[in-house]
Image (tube, rainbow, N blue to C red):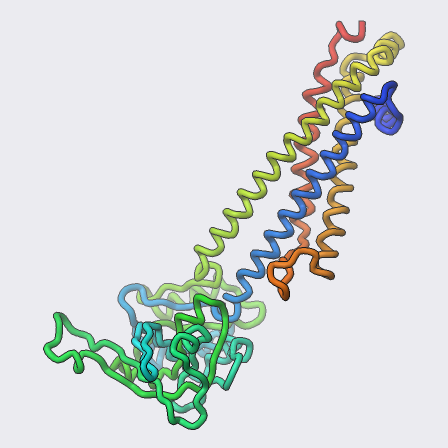
Length: 400
């Protein structure tokens, strides 16, 4: 067995010559454990929060979405449809016609977006998962499904009897201010057959309708769309599919995946995660430099032993390695124990909801392999540096 490693283990697991040394060592070891545990809890908490925040977008955002390169609409003709249907990477696709409109129900008004979708939309997006009341659209062009926020603001419920109709106004294209404001809008009267809920922002933004109603309201030809939403087949190669889509649509369209559609949200969550990691790491650095203090105190305590080892043939570098190994062992064992305690707390949180956001919603957490790796490497590297700095205090004057 390596000489320095053997002596380091003896020093680590045997008490010092004074209670002060023992207390300092215990405090240093406890700091390592708490630092590792805190860092693991933060990373697991943010991983869970990220998944929780993005799960709502997974209900609403498709795997891929095709946008016009310029303007609001682009042409999607029969030839392009056949080519898109022939792509093995595409399981389903849906034509989308979307525009800002003005809603009026009884004596209440609200600005919103109409999102015209075809019959394939339910295959692209899990509409059954977002409907909370009523039903989804049928082939009837005079039905809509409103968001929960829109229905509340307009005091509008599902209307099975077609007695209370929702008026949708869309501005006619043109320049200047029309002389007769009543002729400045196209209007359609529809019935609300369902209410969906995704999140607060989207629930107040969209009202779903058929593409037939949306095109009639916006006076768009049948080969014009604002977006195309795609659901990919299992195991589809996104990069290869993007090249094929480029050959179909040319430079008229831009393709975005789910991450790109939520680019701002991803950046915000990743930034918050990084900042929290850096803050906890800074605290861990302060705690881990207690290890350096403990090693220096141990060097002073074991000065006589170090002289004896030097006199019987141990070199100064070998004696330095003893205390380097001692600090590194303390850090590694503390990191493992901290990870174990952090893992237990996260499991308890997932099972019993120790920390609640609301009375019915526990704070989301997620255990990942990357969290273990990041915490272990962060703690051990900082601990190794602290131990290296402390052990470098040993010189020939100290042992001679």
